[in-house]
Length: 337
Image (cartoon, rainbow, N blue to C red):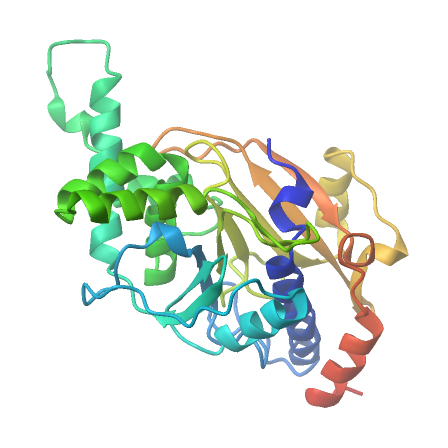
């Protein structure tokens, strides 16, 4: 199972988490004002993440929804501070943000139908290829639907119908889960020439590796990161974060910021975890908030394994975040006493 450091020990997640700390303070204020969004209501966001986000390794994407090549300004090797600033700016745009080793493309509109067809066909053919029985019989049981794929990459509390952000991210993750099959599909579906296929194959290979600075600091991992603007879970304070394409089919992770209560404390004890005061992201009145990383096990299309590992995220140990300063700025921004 992939480690916590591999999942969130990078500059992309550091910036997303710092943004979500700001959001935590806004949501804590709204809880006091009786304006807290419902579990399935949008708006569990703050100033910097109000549109949600999808971050995708750029090499996975051959073209946008208008069948145009992806355009972005190449700036070469990025300094961590410059990279984080661009990530914060990118979260002000709708649609997807594509991350390349030498630049970022923001506000990219992707063809959800293309990724839906890719995922559906790849896993239908894969299921048929590994079928032991040679007689077809009830052949409809071989078909894998987009809903099967989405269900396998979402926690059980994310009920359908699912929005475009969820659909695109889950189906695009096939490019990281099964790169050879995804490449073969794209090469055939897009009628790539030999040179186009060679270029795309090279980009796809690069997208499977973390991008690091010259000093070895990881800017972003080879995963898809989805910042939802909906809580989805009663105990969550902000929108859910999902990390996709981290291993085999059905493996994914969630990062949520949750109120410390009896339910969470029981889960922490059951999972043999522990936390200290340094692990708390924010405290307001009688409410304290922890960051919870859950890593879900692999499964088969259409199924969702309930097996998961749970880890407490320490903002100071892992990221050295200045929570006091972020908190002061947020309280001033959202007019908290």
